[in-house]
Length: 168
Image (cartoon, rainbow, N blue to C red; front, side):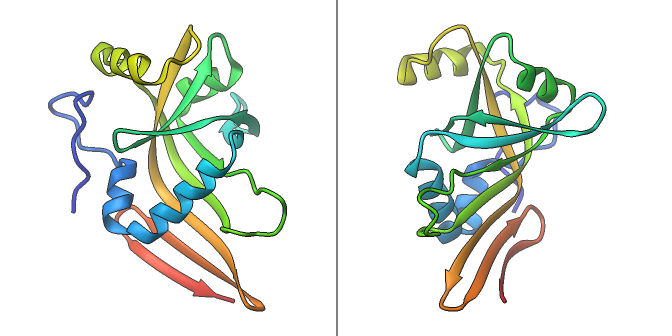
């Protein structure tokens, strides 16, 4: 099923994946991953520097109106990275080290939200510190790794490929 179009997509743009597409295609995985991102405030975002090397940043994640969102203060080097190359990976805070709830990761693109109506609604609902830039995560891969007895169970969803579980 094709991802749903967003009001901020240009009329001729192909719809891009949204978090709600993951929720529809793999509801149990989406709920478990979202629980990991909701369990702590700060997470790790990986971006690509100008020279192509990876960089990691602390970030907060918000689930709002079917999307996973990241905010950035202005100015910020991570924002410069994402404006230049939106590819990124997001890793949920791993908590107390027990692996309770699993280890969650999302990879994809972080695209700046520029629609004034969407931004105004977000400010009204969430009251972020200003000035800020709002980024929508377009998930390409979602992964949850959990302990299954003495083994690891990795459940993943990939855009266009669906759900897969591997136990090792």
